[in-house]
Image (cartoon, rainbow, N blue to C red; front, top):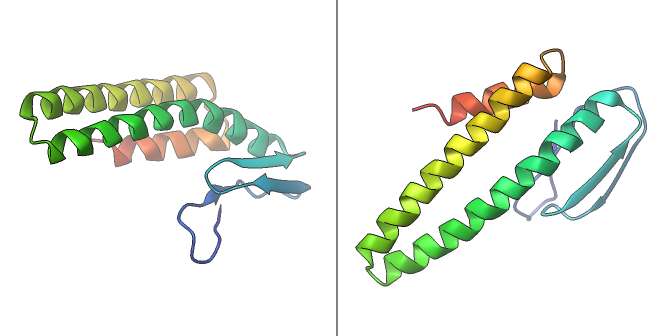
Length: 118
């Protein structure tokens, strides 16, 4: 399930269980506390994924700037870095699935792989 806020970009991913939830922070940096094991697994997975996503956001900002400056060699090198990040995330997702095959979060990781599939 996704929790969103009207007129704001982004959402918070939740695995709904018959457990207690406490949600704070922001859509950009949510804090989801739950007594449920599925949500705890998702939180751990998302924690690592946020690091990759932060790096990708930074690369996209540099890419947009290079595009505005018409710097073709820089845009090409940034595209290569972005593709490398995709590979890193695919490896992270694959390893997560391998190590946690019974986790509901493994289904999310598998879905992410298919979204990035060429």
